[in-house]
Length: 583
Image (cartoon, rainbow, N blue to C red; front, side, top):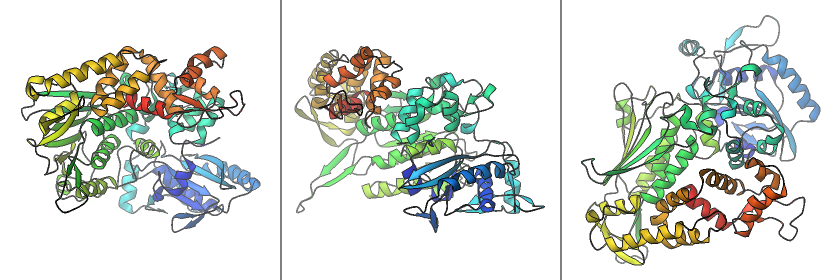
């Protein structure tokens, strides 16, 4: 059975930092038990660790192709591992998985942070061993200092909130289609085995549930990523984007995202990219290339919001807030940073990051490429701003670290009263940035504040979009796609809202999930399983053939429609529709 990660990206260090991976050419039980103990203690709340046996190490990086192991050696290691882990106090058992990689067999030991830390392991496997604590420091397994040992003991049974069991949830609250889509997106081989696993085995395999067979309960991280209704358990876990059109704060619009947290993040980022980020082009006399820059560089906003989702506290009743003013954008999350970060260090851009609040959320976001490795977020933000010619960000917290706030000021060459070109219904109209922001975020603004010249065009655009979208049915989507192509980003928000009004929510969700799934070719069975339908021709006709006829998915072997190797994949038109209704 496979692990819930992308093996290629794991071994290359793209989604897991090198500090959390240890490569071993061969089996060394005495060294391995200490490393397992260190990963189980998870002293810094970094998340899971991986021991990869069968790949040689070169200063912490893999030597490829792998040396590999033979099948008998792997069987012997797994038998010995069971007895070895009983020597850890309290007992701790990693998840072991033989993998075929580049033509060789390797063995991966997945070691999530334990629920009963601190753990001890014997210093040797002979007679009369001493039992000692072990932790990870950078890429090494070491004994803690006296101060670190005291801190480790103080962490006894103190598990990060995201890795705790949620006693109010049931395994039936998980949405299997969401789990399947996640595994598909990260290209985990585990997706191919979902149909062979019970929900209990799948949940254990992904480490999103814990407990005895009689009382197996979801973990908070599983609920946040895969619950059918996240609001039922975490009504305050949401991202709120509030756009203020003046400094008084009385004239504003808001957009709230309440889905599973990775979908919240992706949809909020898409909204910001399409409705807030703007490019300005200035021609420079005597130079062939124009100067291009943005009011806010998207890369900086993306990193800041991803960090907020990663590091916020999910056990409080505060949402993530994004406040957009004519001259600045702020992202606020609660609570504030963990020590040693404080107000003074933030103001001086001095970042010493050692411990993390959420160890499992980070793993999921990294697999989805929504956040990067440890301590890389702030440099990414600063570099993106400098490259764009924007001012440095302002990081803030209070003495009690009750909040974390990052503020981006608009590029100095974007001025609130500057005029920018906006094309509406084929006509180019000049607006100042303050009014243009309102048009793009709301589409149909309070017209008296925008100007009489703009009013007729905006009204006409609104009517045309609404008429086109009301023709929307699952079986006939050309009008919507054409409308979106014609009016572009400016019409996107209203298109999506009208689409959702015209179609039942479950059909929208099924369509989104199906088109997402089929970005990688899928079998007929996999698609119908996603929709929780039996593999009957009627279901195939109503849910697959209809999408083929409308050009949303296509056969991978079109000349042999009944081939046993036939699969189905999303077309460019399907991807366009997915962009319209899912962003």
